[in-house]
Length: 118
Image 1: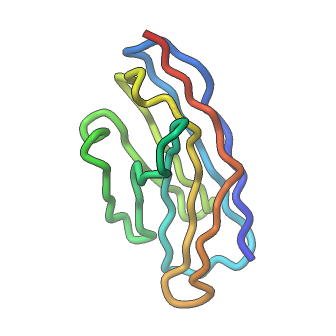
Image 2 (image 1 turned 90 degrees about the horizontal axis):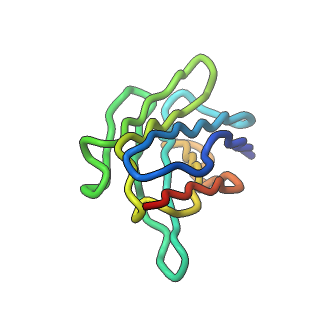
């Protein structure tokens, strides 16, 4: 089992910045990936950004150049720095974790609301 605890998020005006964090604990192996998904009302959950334990990253096209994902492996923590936020970034943001080779269950955080007003 892996537990994920998110923090950060909130409300900001368009053009502003926010950072969300997520700490993982439990059955964590050395090779894994952590990331952030988001779900807006009436829409499917979508990948925002993902980072492997080795540092490789993937971003949704809609956030490239504005969002930066990073991680601290010693703290099992992933961060998402969100800059130049747009109203369309408004969603519940979920932390995601998955080990690569053992216990490959998808684990999710409880979600944190990000609201961007115009």
